[in-house]
Image 1 (spheres, rainbow, N blue to C red):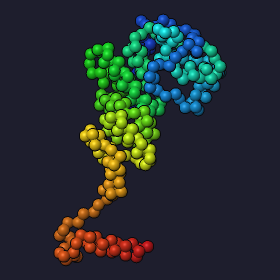
Image 2 (image 1 turned 90 degrees about the vertical axis):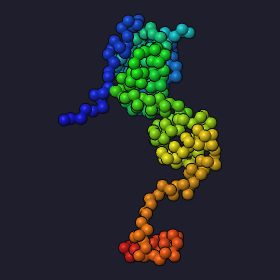
Image 3 (image 1 turned 180 degrees about the vertical axis):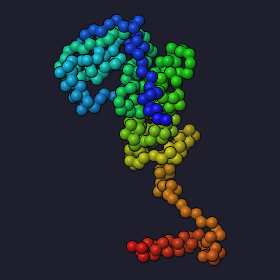
Image 4 (image 1 turned 120 degrees about the vertical axis):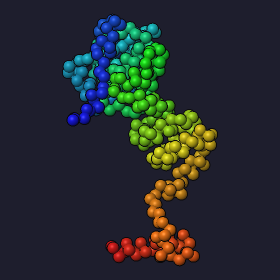
Length: 289
């Protein structure tokens, strides 16, 4: 039996669901200087190479897929989907862009913004975390029935547990989230650090930047425990990452006492036994070379 791939779990929104037939005013040509970024937009712009490709495509073919926007009470339009297309149009020297104008509430706008962007390629953990949190809060505010976490994951096929972990990750500072994106902090370690208060997060960030060391799960858990007890200090961090602490993670070989008795009299200390074993190993290595 063939194992279904992850794409089979994704529930693609229909045109009607995503764009909302009943709240669409129609596609208009909107001046790019009248378009404003979505408030707290969680998705980063595409890299320069992809942006350059988009600019060239728009110069040659125009904007093939309209963006989505809604009217701002203070004037102009708020972009729901199409931030990169708008930026590319500006770089291409094109003054207008086709936008599908929707008449929707703040919560509906957040949900539409997340759903229209979350299936992009190469979504970073920080983007996913912030987007899932925004959508979750919008759904809760709407008072929709059912499991809000499951509803958040419908667009990507991710389960409630995964959604919950990403939302937890969103409690990290932007600086620590960047380190998660760069894989300098592991995802699970980031979740442990997300329970720290802002001051303690800043303290840990300084130490990580200074040491350029990747945290282990054990270290992240210890840091979380100290923070929750109000005992996280620079001295505590130095102790956690001291040389002696690192030695604890090295491989250990433990001999049962009975196996050593025939080689060492009872009056030998542990240190003496270790010294003899190391000397014999050094001799063995030299002979093997």
